Amino acid sequence: MDVYGAYMTHLDLLEDEERTILELKGAFEIPSQEVQDELIDAFFSWVAPVLPVVNQRVFLSMYKDPLNPPSLLLLQAIFLAGSRVVKEKNCESESSAGAHSSMVYLQRAKALYDAEFEKDYTTVVQALLLMSWYWQGTEDTTENGLFYWSRLAIGVAQNFGMHRSNELEMSLSERRLWRRIWWTLYTRDRAMAAAYGRPISIDADLTNVDTITQDDFIEGEGHQPDSVQVQFFIQYVRLCELMDLVVGRRRRAGSLTESEFAQWEIRLSRWMMQCPEQMHWAQARHSFWPAILHSIYYTMVCQLHALLPAVSRPSTSSAVALQAGSTIASIMQTIVSHGQVTYVPPSVYGSFCLTYPSTNTT
Image (cartoon, rainbow, N blue to C red; front, side, top):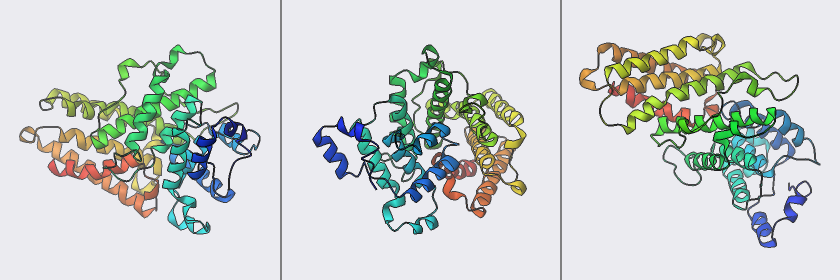
């Protein structure tokens, strides 16, 4: 299926050569209506809670309006992100093997981005963040990888002042969405730095964006956002703010001192005590988003204890780290038993892989 009719105005602005290149790359092609609906539903269910950068009400309203469709770049990026969490058994309903192919959607979105098809910078940042959901493993540093697209999204956002958005005039709904986008950029930056040892791109001291709140997820009059998903992201942001310990310590010479360790142990404990009850995880009452949140928390506990010098590490530290590692293993086993591995975010999956070496050395 193609989208010529809906995007004719945009197409008329392209040079003939640009249009031909985009056609050859399939940038104007979209899957069947059934597959579109499936991918969009998968995106908002399993990706948007971690990357809450799209106003769902506005997007779905435009998606249903043939006269005012959503950005084609954003649409292809949503298809890409959604395809990463659609289970393989669901792909059999589509005759074309490429209908759920993440690489196909990545190539289409990349072609549109390279051609500067989308002129709205906010939409470009949204799309780049969603394109970062594609990855081929922890060593993927190519322009198909999550590191490349996340860093690019941060650069574009900072280039037009999203990190100083309090100084800009905009409507309440725009400001709320910008906050969600900015804090998503921040969490991506910190999560990748902590999980994969990458340098950070965002200097928190150079930003003036207000802290994310529940109100930022209200998408219109009478709208009540999902409280679990909202609290997940808010608590995730707070954990990412604590990740600066791990990230910063890797860049500094010398070992972690006992006073530093005690200070950060208190901060992590305080986060746990202040975490809302609905976000607590227990194996007997498993819920996916609390499970992901606590896997991140316990990974940070393991990494904190691993920063202590082995020669001066008390036995209690080893016990705490081993207990944290055991909890992570329980969370992963529960996620597997519920058939939810497909939905685990890439950076969290990477943290799982890195936790075991940290625990063993502790």
